[in-house]
Length: 422
Image 1: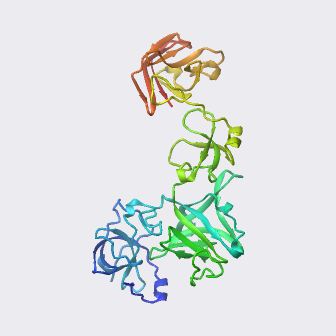
Image 2: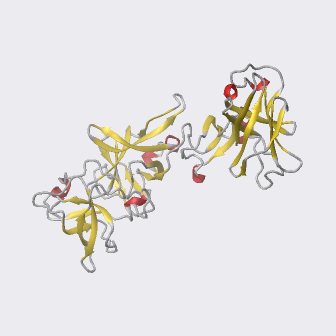
């Protein structure tokens, strides 16, 4: 059943902001639903900037509310964003599953449920005829963040990584005849809107494998009948859910990276399809790149040293670079890089100072080894003190803790704790 229309002008004149409601029932065989307004303090639904409460002649419960795509399968209890029409006679909503699921919430346009904390990716699907010179390279790594894009207006503003400034800068899309920033917003009925330079609105094609938008002179960005697929003199953009990318990532390529600990940068391939580019809170840093080949990356930075197989962690080889943290050790407190050499992991004075003591010389100050009985043990001060047995150890993730450790290099210190991690 098609929702009633006040008039094209009335629908365009809708000015109210959306608010969350719970579907309570449906007229048999139709997309017409009853609803109740939800408490705006409900923490299971995303916030809506500027959300309003129905008042005056509009009650906080009622019907009809129409699903804009004609879906008749919206279950009772579903939470949806409702939009009142200009006349106040009915309401609109778009259903895409549980809004708490966030972006990609089982919706045909891939954007229903998009939250302010989500990032979206912009890509060029095709560029035919007069737009053939647009070039995919400008879309290699374009992502959108939710923010204010004009006075009091919010949406997903798209950015691209600028290798010259080593920062994300606002994306200007270039096409034949002009250029401009790209912004994703939503109409009052929940339909995604993609605009260029703040004025040119691309034609939205729902339910065709993601949120796709068509632009070109044929539809003139005015809403005329769009071309089917990639016909001559059009271009098609796609907006899809994505993780937020790590600083320095500029598309699928080889990079020099550094992860946890004091390890040197090493060469790896970072691919979007594997989620390698995601900024998920790990201490993961891109040192340099991108590089076209692994050989070029390895020439710029060494590969990661192979892990060491030990009887202490037979199923989990141990990295060649470890970190030892000393606490309750007085002048020795601090974090030290243990490097694998001569069959042990050690920190020597050539590597730097020990706490507030000096550096220089080759004495091994901190030593970790797996002994012949396949047990971890720890020494200090060029094997003056030790072996100390671990109070706890684990292989995945790697962690060994030693208590009551003694030092004497710059004053006797007893009872320190040393924690070794990967």
